[in-house]
Length: 268
Ligand SMILES: Cc1ncc(COP(=O)(O)O)c(C=O)c1O
Image (cartoon, rainbow, N blue to C red; front, top):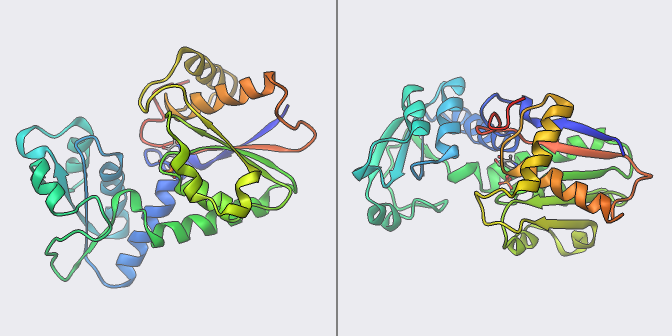
């Protein structure tokens, strides 16, 4: 079985490929509409805030963040790096963070007129539209009938590849957590029978030994770095499905490698 590796990890050294696509779309829009600052929110270990801190200066924009729980703690190493990249942090107690609805796309926050609020992960219609275009472009470069294996977190990447799924292709989706059923809401009903979902036996943040082993094998075989959660679960899921003879082998296969902040955990 031969797989083509789609290197979305090369879009940015620290920001996961799909997140890069989403945030770049928001930042380009902010710039085009004349904003000078972007504001967002997240928790103490937010990959999103770190990514935004890395990318905003590239678009000539200042970045500020409201951080849940920072009122009573020191910034995490990730947030310290965001601060070093110029992001201004506003500490909030958990209750205040919740009452301002900062985890939604429409928080009850009084923003200065030169600031645009970006929802967590760059989600929402702006980010999703950019991901849909990106997915359609990738599909157009793949041979007809390609089987595409990818990882899912919130499901916005899955949504983009499902919305543009060619008729003879299939998506094989690994989600590194137990209850992945919410991901089906991301897929229009007519496409659901072209998708196989592989949830993990573990809760989010935990990787079993088999997945770790397959993650390491992948790194050894390819020399490409991966995170310790998403890609190991995808490689183990693929290997197990292969052993159960569930994978069509007469068609081309591609694997989307998202990369991201934690992609150096299983370093080659
Ligand atoms: C390694 C990895 N895979 C997949 C994804 C896709 O996530 P989502 O389902 O939120 O689009 C991410 C998100 O950043 C990621 O870091």
